[in-house]
Every structure is written in structure tokens, then in C-alpha cells.
Length: 162
Image (cartoon, rainbow, N blue to C red; front, side, top):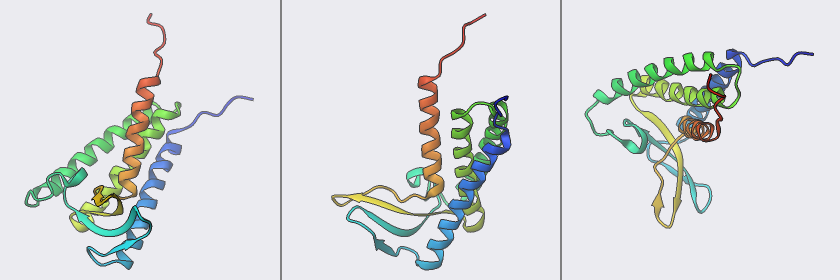
């Protein structure tokens, strides 16, 4: 029996799952927290509602508003490239999975930027008084996707040259 090869729809489904989980978790936080409210969960983890108008680690957060459209356009351009790459590598496993995680995360954060002008962050890890910048499910998917891309690049073996 021939082995079924993954089609691009499977990877786009993974990206859609990331967007869905991201948006549902953000909706839950938005419905239960007010801005800046913190709920300690463990000795090293809190739930908190913050809005990040910048990029990772609040880069350009205080730039005056132009960054919203810059980040939306950048994320959409990268997303278009990711769609092309997923289609091109759909029969592989690790690479399209990694690309799908990044795609889903990017689109999840674009939705926030368009709805709120900023990204909803709510996961707050801390240790000895030092807090990692708050993040969300989309950010987590992007981080895992990039880590998988790096892993794939480090372990990928090229075929023999002709």
C-alpha cells in the first residue's frame, strides 16, 4: 500500500489551529482581566493582561503608532512567503511543520494588531524578581517554529551533488 504524503492543507490546518488557540486564549484573558491585572499561578508564573504595541520584547513599542502598520505589513509579507514555502515543502515533515507554527503565530498577532492596535500578551514567567517579557500562544508557536527551523538546518543532510 502506498504511503500517503502530507498535503499543504495539513500544514495550513496546523497554522489555523495555532491561530484558533491563540485567539481563544486571548479572548479568555480579555474577558476575565483588566489591563495590568496579575493573577499569581505559581511561584514563577503569573497570568497578566498587557498590550504590546511593539515587536518582541516591546521593541519599538513607544514609536508613536506607525509601527502597527509596519508590523502588520511585515507579518503579512512573511506569511505569504511561508505559504509558498509550505506548498513547496509539503511532502516533508519537520520543515513545513515549523513553517506552519510560525505562520499561525504571525497571523494570530496580526489579528490583534488589526483589532486592538497592539498584541495581547498574558503569560508572565519570573524568577528572583526578574520577569521575562509577557508573551502569548502565538509568540510561543513562533518560538517553537523557529527552534525547529534551526534544528532542521543543523541536522538536514544534503543529497549528493550531481
